[in-house]
Length: 178
Image 1 (cartoon, rainbow, N blue to C red):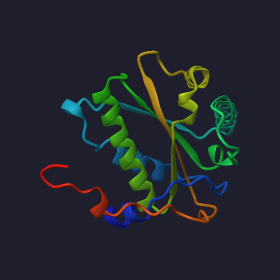
Image 2 (cartoon, rainbow, N blue to C red):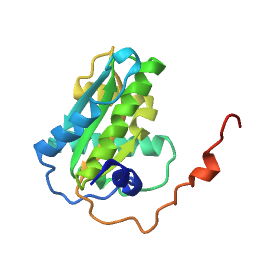
Image 3 (cartoon, rainbow, N blue to C red):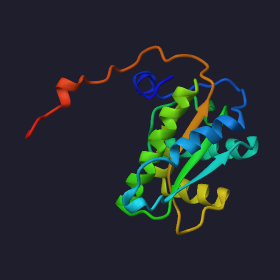
């Protein structure tokens, strides 16, 4: 699938088959991530691939606790355990480096779609100070490294009942000035 088709068809996935994502696919997705542009070519990103079932189960529990703490609606969170989980981290919390790492994450999402995989970015766990601290401890993330985003990857179990249609270009494009 070409990049434009992947961007057009990509959507956040919250339901995966309990089927292992091949290591080669994960490597290809992360290979796309590290080709992202970065401020001053700092390439500040780091990725933690979590495939171990026990670690994913612990992260799911932390995710569930964060959702409760943040008063989020009830949700089936099995997607945190099915498939693969990648924690996108950054060398520092500076805006320029964070933006660079998020561009790398966007490349991951497009690459996953191009490979026929679903993906789901989430910051929920990291919005909870306690959850973020426990995630750091669980995965051994150094203090100087900032976890920014969790990305689930997997084989889509079912398509969402509805998609919110994206705004057309005419609604968001301004030329020369607002």
